[in-house]
Image 1 (cartoon, rainbow, N blue to C red):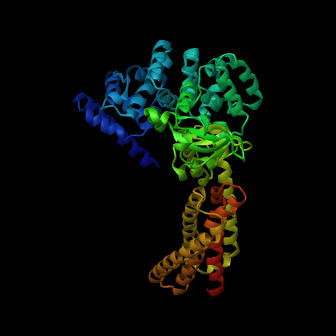
Image 2 (cartoon, rainbow, N blue to C red):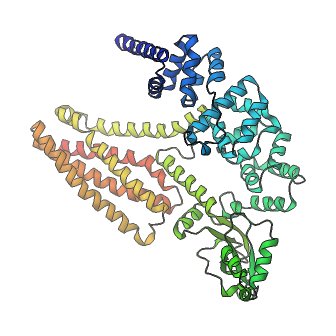
Image 3 (cartoon, rainbow, N blue to C red):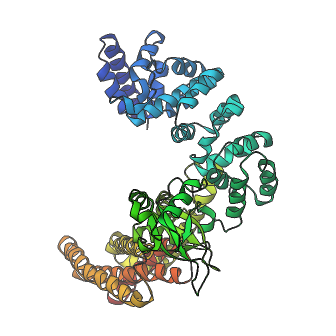
Length: 559
């Protein structure tokens, strides 16, 4: 340990001397290359140990490439010095400068915000956020620590751009909202769009929502307030909660009347692509949707005098898919992916009347969240967020680790049952981890493919058994090839054909078992309305226990 530590110190000292020498010789590219390969903690050590007269020069050379985490490792005096000299260049818009990437643009403003927040320069801080787009402002705040964010928001007060709240991470937004006074919260909400108000209110405690709604009712448009109340009356994960206003007309309306209705409608979504047509004389429902007409087509028809007086039903097209207000969000993402349309109408399931629309932009956000959620669930981190606090991160991860610990104990228990067998053959102690390890990898492969197929609605009752049979057969074939290969290598290397044969059979059976569980467990969970990705928690347990049991069981019988 002493030799390793001495070696690390020697390397660091040599690196520091190289940087100082490069600064003296004005070899700035070499300095940048060295810093690009260092971790934030090592960069902070170099900056802290470099001579004071060269520190400012070094910081200016590094520029916006300096990672924000470096600041947290610096002492307070050096931190102030770095923030005051980190960047002299001012990026107003990265898209206007070919030499400035978006990442450089963000990192530049992260340091600027840190600098002005630390020195309490409200005017400079306000100017930065006034020039930034809300999405970029949200990204910058996400790079700051919790204390730094609170300092920025408290310093700006009512000058803080509330539009940022619509783009920022949910956990950070909740943290910001909790730190605001009630008056400031109402002030921010009153300046937001109705979609952002709905998104923020649904993250606030249900018992507080009526009071907040009452407070903002006099500060926003009455029609917007009605839409907000209506949206909040639907379930959180339904189409009714996220839909935007749409426009509809009857089949007997003329092209001119439909166009005139479009022109006087002010509450329609700016992303809307169609006007929807309902049959007033329908036997099923007074408002049943029977078709749609693209807004571009409507404008084109208005350019011809003869078509203006024609009824719209002559030009309408079939609606690919119609949602209702109770359609689940997970279903919406799948339907957009399947039908590939710019928007879908949402109707009241009772009278089929148009209630709103869901746009492709909203569907993209839904799909992104679903994909991220599936990845986390496969890792045993259901509903985890990168910006969770340390306490919550520990609590959520410890659950999965606790299950893994129990699984390991179960595997060890199986090994303990065959303790005498293992003592008789040292080869078993060396080779026995192979079967469960390979089986676990095979199971995760099948699980990933099956979960993806379920999310794409490629597995239903009609093909469940065919799917399971296919995966088991594929793993059986792969298991035979892997088993024979590993068994032959074992025989050639250890000169023991019995152990090689037992290992080959154990691998074949465990890989086959992995195919059965990897496909069967997620399908079973899906049938009972559970997240199929949760199968990952049980999969490694089952393959480990089965792998050890088969290998050691056969060894006890035949060795």
